Amino acid sequence: MADGKLHLNPILFNKYIKNLEKRIGNKIEQADAEFEAGMTDMERIAKQKAPADEGYLRASIKAVKEKPLTYILRANTRYAAYVEFGTGKYAKSYVQGLEEYWKKLASKYYKNGKGKTDRQPFFYPTVMETLPTIYRRIKEVLK
Image (cartoon, one colour):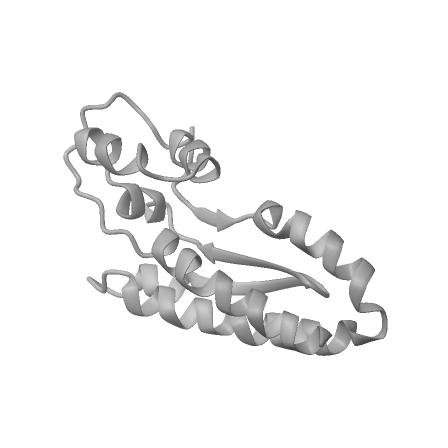
């Protein structure tokens, strides 16, 4: 059974990072610093977009560095995915408009289609909003 935690897996970045590592050579530290700054922005924006309620969801959102040029954005509560995608008919209508990676992620949390929780997207919109800026910042380092 899925626990509801959301993790932005490095898989979204892997193709870009592999190509990037070949190109940057001695600029890896500078590129990583830009990536880290971008992920810090991503964390801040996700926290702003997440519903507050008691604050546990917002407090659980973290950008974590695994190694140079490898970061994970996490929303580490049992219910994060249900807040993001909604449940039942709400999830169905929202998820079908997402990119394939996100559809697969959301499908891990599907139970029986009877849920009644409306979606409150904070994770996906933040990632889609901030990734282009992160990529642009890294490209600037490579000039």
